[in-house]
Length: 46
Length: 234
Image (cartoon, rainbow over all chains, first blue to last red; front, top):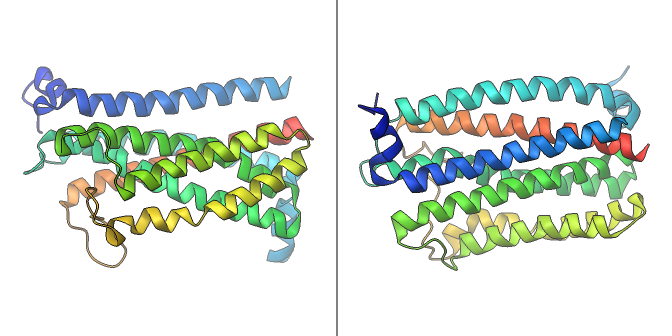
């Protein structure tokens, strides 16, 4: 285990902005693609 | 049924449609499970890097996304070439279905690279051979999608897109070997097929789990999209 507390986990040793900025945008992109794919599937079925 | 006949049987969009749905569902599930495992290993098992501290943890999405961006382009060009050679309808549909997911992974690789470059190199962006050729890859994906969107007849759009995809494939080895051919700020590969990887085994396993998760995600997304395209066109 690398983290003593939740604060330490969010801080990422001072690199929190870069690490969480990467992960947040990457997973937001994937979530958006899934959202648009589901919408397109529904529209294609109709 | 012989193997060759089976392949051509599935090359028909109608027979491929239900199969694609089954594979896609399994891949969505597998991708979510592998991503959960990969994130767990990446954040809780893999140790802090001696040189880069915690900033290195971006590697768990950066490298798998960069691999997928290149691999999906080659796959897209392969389907495009198959479509040109055999004039099969499904091939062009597969190429079109792969492009948005490939573009997405290219963007993720560039974005996470920028956020990794700032703390380690001191700059979000440099015009380095690796970064520049990856940016060109993004433009190739976007160009392919824009070209196909601009042509009304889907079969003609497939052929025009196929040409662009095949010409652009020359960029992929340039990206891959850029760190060897030029003196780049971007570091060389830590993982290759030729030698044992130069990183801690827990770091490597986290990265490979995420790479597998992105693989399954790409398969699921592409197959879901090809089902939409089949429905829309036929």
